Image 1 (tube, one colour):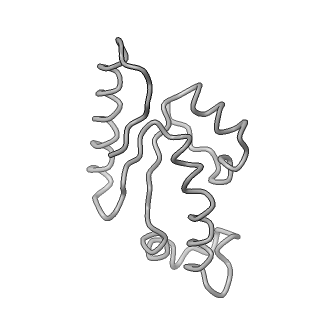
Image 2: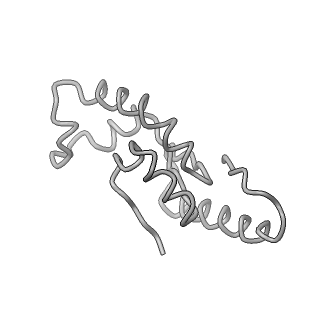
Length: 111
């Protein structure tokens, strides 16, 4: 099962703890500049309906990125790979985690 909580969910410590303890969390990390490029025509995101969306994305990234990383078991750098490549990267990490489940302590993984 996949769960995609709202982006602001990580702002509350209780939410971060619940997410991390109840499932494997994959953080699809993107640089603010990449997000600005992807979202340049999006009018449905209230936080980005400002004069300088890139500035807002950088501010949000500065606050939220450390929280996402704290919560995540896996961090996948999205960059510009295809969706299929990203899916394969996620599946590989989850399969590796399942193989290691037999003994290693959970310290998280960063790709």
